[in-house]
Image (cartoon, rainbow, N blue to C red; front, side, top):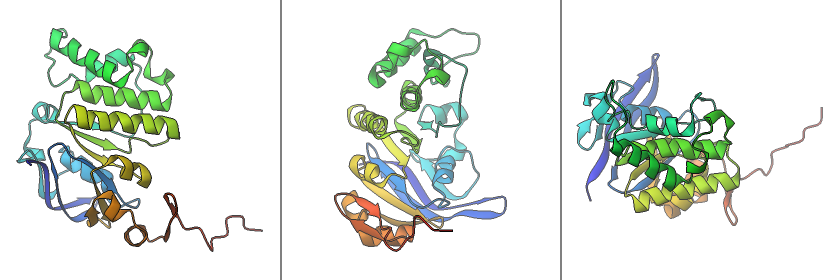
Length: 260
């Protein structure tokens, strides 16, 4: 299978602080890979290196081309990005926001083409967001808004989608709907997905492979069955884990309610 994302010895410093010290892994076409790990491990920064936002050492290639070497519109035709949305609001209708996903194809002073409209309508249909196309983003629930962000990425028609915490701040129902949607995009549209995910059980349920990042390095990598075990998780998060029906942090010995 062809490799769509290739990272080799990626190093990144921001403000004099070493964020990524030595990251190497690859993602093949059509894979769904989740990046897990503790806060501060460099997960979001890694996505931004792939988006060409940060100048870095080492190699971060998309389809064999260094991410920083792409012209911005060409990169936007290759890879789309769904960020964390909890602190982002736009005074736009759902339809207009999803149409913004067509920006790599839109030309100045020209209206939307038939192809642009078709791409937006297809994205709205697949994400089941068309029925509130006239509503503004700020009137939507967190789950509805996340689906709209994914619709904009779909309208962009890229073969690769990066996501940063797609289930953040969503209740279980909406998180499940969003993750099912992403898996549908992965399997039915053939999109390659690389997502940062703090929810271990969600990452295990939907991903083909997990990559554990710690201290700016790849700490572990493998299938969900290989990684979501008490020993590797305890080493990754420096926290003991118990295996029950699902994996949960071990809170034995921790006094939750302390008396003053």
